[in-house]
Amino acid sequence: MSKKEEKSLYILGWMLLAAAVLLLGITKGLHMQMKIFSLPCVFRELTGYYCPGCGGTRACAALLQGKIVKSFLCHPVVLYTAVIYGWYMITHTIEYLTRGKLAAGMRYRDLYLYLAAAIILIQWVVRNLLKLIWGIDIL
Image (cartoon, rainbow, N blue to C red; front, side, top):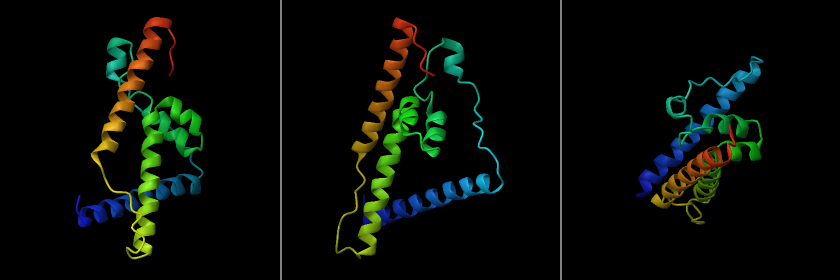
């Protein structure tokens, strides 16, 4: 990835953070509760088993409430993504503040996406095996 693309990704990261803070500020300022609105999962409705994304919305809500363990249990890729995002933003901020003298910026690698896909696949298989074999319904 070129320096220009890295910088664009960094700026996009700040825009994402600003949008999240704005949304949280509006809901807190208006004393609104953030209610999770989600449509039923078609895959789960048809098969009775979890889809690869089941629990993602609950994981995001739990993470925003500071419930890290609950977020991980709902869907581990959400916590993984938050950690990768945080590390990327912190290291690039350090690099930009030092004007490149401290080249600490985490570089984009496809490996991060492959790891996320592996986490999604593993949690999907484990959840459905728990439900199929032992009847344990995680969500």
